[in-house]
Length: 431
Image (cartoon, rainbow, N blue to C red; front, side, top):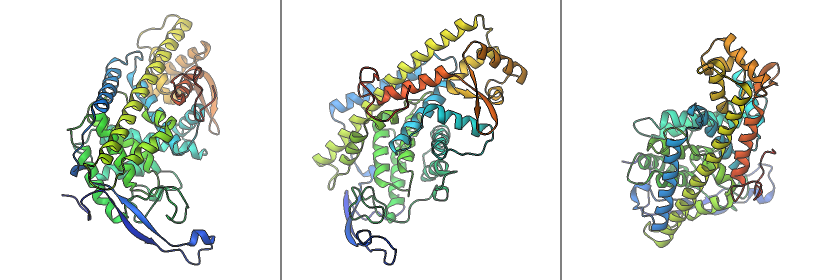
C-alpha cells in the first residue's frame, strides 16, 4: 500500500496559486503572483506498459550488447579496472548533463589528491567525485539489497551532495514546490513544474515498488524508472544525477550488467535536446492507455535503448585502444614476471591512471619497496610520468591512458561516434 496522498486516478495537473514574496527586494517581475499547474504522473504500478515491436527490438539489441560486453570484456586482465573507469566516465557524463564540465586529467588529479589526504580546492571536481562516490555505493550496495527502498534513494542523494555547499539538503525530500526553467524566484514562466511536495513520498514508494519488479526487460525498466524519477523531481538539487544513478542500480539489480556498466550518460549528454524532449513526451495528461501516453513512453524507451547500445559500442572501441596500449607497454618493458608488482600495476592502471606509490601499494597488495621499484621501472619505460598533485604530494600519471579516456569522451560526443570524421557536438576535453 502506498504511503502519502495520491488523490488522483490518472496523470493530471494540479492548479495552484503562487504568492509573491513581498519585501524581498527582487525586481517587480520576480515578485509577481500567478496561477501555475503542477504535473502529477500516474503511479507506475497502476499502468499497463506495452512496447511497440520496433521499440522492443531496440531494447533487445541494447540488452544483448550490454550482456555481451559484460561476458566478453577480457582485454583488461583486471576487469575491476575497466569497471572503475566506466563508473568514472558515467559520473562525468551525468555531471556534464547538469553543466558541470571537467577534463579527465583535472578530475583524476583531484581524485588522487583527495586520496592522498589533501584538502579539496577544486569545487567542480569535488562535486563530480561526490557523484562517483554516490554511484559506486549505489551499484555496490543498493543493487545487491533485497529490495530498493526510498531510504536507499535518499542515501544516494546524501552521498552525492556530501562535501558540497548543498550538503545540508542531501538525503531530504523537498518540502517546497520546485520547477524547471523560467525565473529562479517563481514558477510563473517555468517549462515544467513537478508534483506538489505532498505527493512526492507516495510517488517515490510507487517508483521503488516498480524498480523491484521483474516483468519488463531491464533496459525498459531502467528507462521508465529514470523518466518517472525525473518527473517526480523529489529533491531541491541533484535530481538528474541521482536519477541517472538509479538507471545503473536497476541494470545491476536485474543482472544485466554484473561486471561493467555502460556510460550511457556520456551519450545522453551529447543528445541533450532529444533527451529532454523524449522525457517531456512521457508526461501525458489523462488516461495511461491513451495514444499520447503510449507513444510518449515508447519514444523515450527507444531513445534510451539506442543510447545504451551506442555507449557499449564506444566503450568497446576504448577497450581495444587500452588492449593495444598495454601490448605496447609490455613491448617497451621487455620480460615482465607474472604476478609481479609491475605485472599487477599494468593491469590496474587503466582504472587509476594517476596514482601515488601508497595508493598503488593498496591497489596491488605488494610491499612499498616492490611497488616503488615497479613504478620506477614504468617511469623509465615511459608508461608513467611523475607529477605533483595537491599542495605537496608526488604522484605518477599514465599520459597515454588519460589520452584514451579523453578519446572515449570525444567519441561519445560525436554524433557519428567518430570524433575525426564527425566533430563533437558539445564541449569536450582537448586531446
